[in-house]
Image 1 (cartoon, one colour):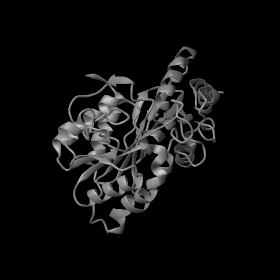
Image 2: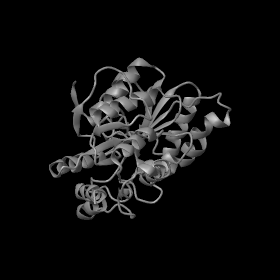
Image 3: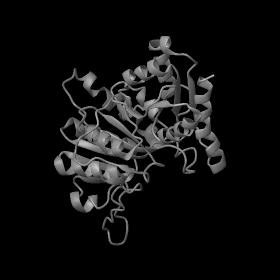
Image 4: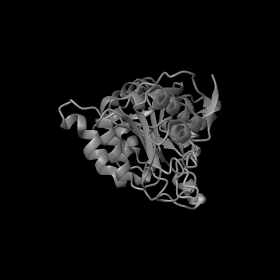
Amino acid sequence: MPIMSYREAVTEALTIEMDRDETVIIMGEDIAGGAGGSSGVRDNQSGIWGTYPQFHAKYGENRFIDMPISEAAIVAAAAGAALTGMRPIAEIMFADFLGYCLDQVQNQAAKFRYMFGGTSRTPMVIRTAYGAGLSAAAQHSQCMYSQITHIPGMKVAVPSKPADAKGLMLTAIRDDDPVLFFEHKALFGIMGEVPEGDEGIPFGEAAMYREGDDCTVVAIGRMVHFAETAIDSLIGEGITCDLVDPRTTSPLDEETILESVEHTGRLVIVDESTPRCSVATDIAGIVASKGFHSLKAPIEIITSAHSPVPFSPVLETAYLPSVDDITAAIRKTQE
């Protein structure tokens, strides 16, 4: 399989769908570089995350649309376009800015199918970058997938690997319901094998990245990579673990998680979100209510601190879950 970066995998999925279906359009702030210079020509800087190389030249302004600096306008326009038969992809530059368009997400797009008796479709994707680790400070580093997962009618994808970024994006664009697609800004440069072709990854199907007998580790997004390092470091101590990546938090693959816990009897959850009302606490609640009989030890939950994300690199590192935190939690379940 080809080796490519997470960023390139996203671009490949977008390209496949833009080439395949003329109803797919992309809209967002500064995605085409703006036309404010003296030449008046858009320079297509590929967007701030570098995921749209030469898209403006290839697809033109009718399908690759530079929008005003208004998240509400971007998402509202996308929702309206979806209702009229288009398949828009709206970019919200940072997940922290979802608050500006929460009404359009929560009260409009997520509810159209329900409000109109199932007669309408809202096939739209909202791409956004999330997460700490780049010293982007408190207003540009948050994990917002827990908040959006709480909204009925929204599907939520949180890929951790390049292959998942491509496969889940293909599925998201083809889905007839609104999808919020969270891409961790610290993962854009990671490399990995990515299958060729245009086959999507079904929503609601978790990936199992490690298999073992002693503990189930459920990790989300960038935390999957931290968990892999932690799990591999414990093999020498005779401790082996299942590593489950849900890949989508709505729908959530409860079955895979519960089956793994039934096998191992122990559960560690690693989630970059802050702890209160997070995906981690949701998963813990599901296992406690549906798989309590399988547990041989208390559930361990590892999250970021319940505070704004620090700007200082030293404090930011302390704020985030660490490999040492994960290994300690796994060891604790073995006591």
